[in-house]
Image (cartoon, rainbow, N blue to C red):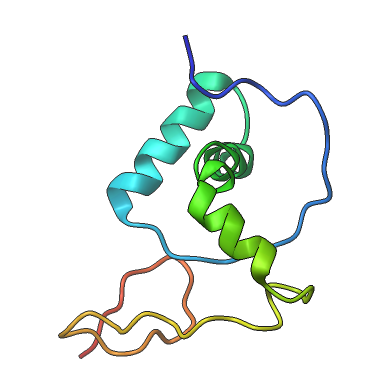
Length: 97
């Protein structure tokens, strides 16, 4: 039995581009196939099932000013040692000559 159930309602969707570790991307795609839904849906359900149930996060979130989360991003994490800043490519690994 799957942990994530197929969707029953529709919510407004926005685009967000991010990088995933390859094993996580593979598992995500396979899980979406397993339940017969999209990768986007699985990611949203993972967020609903983890981040939105974290009591510390919910308390912190309630204390934040009522602004768009996109308008006030936190500082991005530092790049791992040995990697240069991303060049904007979406799905190919960083390769440098």
